[in-house]
Image (cartoon, rainbow, N blue to C red; front, side, top):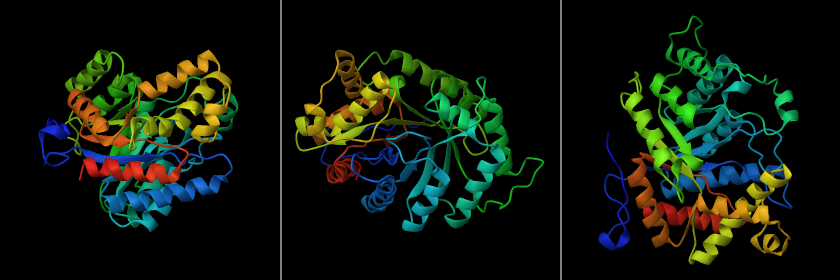
Length: 346
């Protein structure tokens, strides 16, 4: 398998080697205090248009239900708007939570998307439960849940034409599948011969990386080649934020970290707030701990600092794609960060 890496700036004259990893963005349509939810969706479309202009290879959207801080609940619908607004960038779901849907319906949705944007649609699949018990009940989600591996295999059979039911519309080009993977998800992806998108603790950004590296090694070793994917493929997903100074970058990370801290301590995942409002708000010792943990799992700093940290992470994981899942309250600062990250891969 090809190993991609970024070399530190001091060692070369251009930002990335010729064999650069693919670069993409994940946008969850984060809501902001004082804005209607619709502004978050419009912001996602605008960000995708700019990502295409900057040369990003792929733009991912996600699925969340009943979460005040996230307007992205219907990835297939949102991707239709993205396909209309763009012309060349690939568009993906990261992901569709398959336990909430019938595999046939998901296959029909993405085959329809592919008909309007052939060769640009990617279907990432996950199995996260609903955010709260009420949401899980609304989604008719059983405690034991469906068999994720079986559902993924069934969905693929519709898309590749091997199922007993003929999918309509028939895709003109294949719709690639990805698995959003933790420990057991990696096993499913290896068995089915599918690429994975990994993030969170498995990356070990600022902690012990060995368990995550072992999980990735197990995935690669157990990988069963499939028709679309003869080799294993790993994409890594994490917050990546760039600013002129490390302090400014830390401020960009603060809104998302604060939302995560409130989620862990108060059971709510709120809209993004400004860094100044967060600094003025009281916080408990436990919330401070979660703030620090979230910051430790991200890469934030100046372009040079981010470049060095990404070089180490990409080398350690052998990732073929970086999925920057960044968000912050200040849309202009987020756009500047996206542009600075794209420049590292130019």
